[in-house]
Length: 182
Image (cartoon, rainbow, N blue to C red; front, side, top):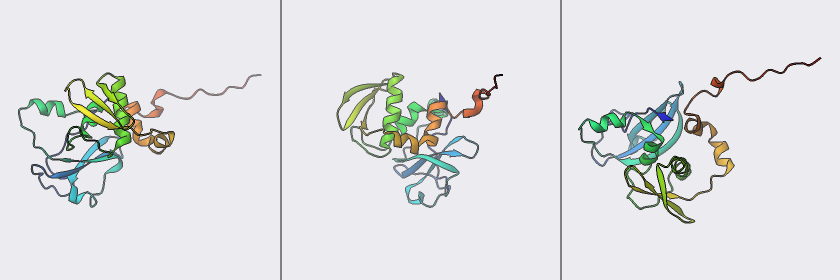
């Protein structure tokens, strides 16, 4: 299950101003009217002024780091997977620090990737889980929060793209029809 979403933009969605190194960037993952996932990046100072092109699924902030243009990263960055989405939640945070921002989504994605064996649990306490990302060997601290049914009910529509890959739930076919017996 993969989602094709643009990597971090080089300029603001709102003003078109180019990001400079270490600019604060407010990022949002948005599901637009066509059901596509779109990433919206703006300067932190513009975050409250921008009109989103759909329903906001999640938000985070990070510092802008210009990428070297060796061509290899451009091809890899063309698609955003659950793996890349998980990692992008930690961009701009100091490694080894515990941030409560998007804690439920971090935990949900962490559990998903742990099940797929992309993440390995290094330590688990009451306050956090320390994951090791197998491909990159980076460590991530994920807050231990309760994923109660209310979280899933309130965010069911937002989380549907993670579970079914954004496919229409009616694509499975017609429901069985009731028949009368005589």
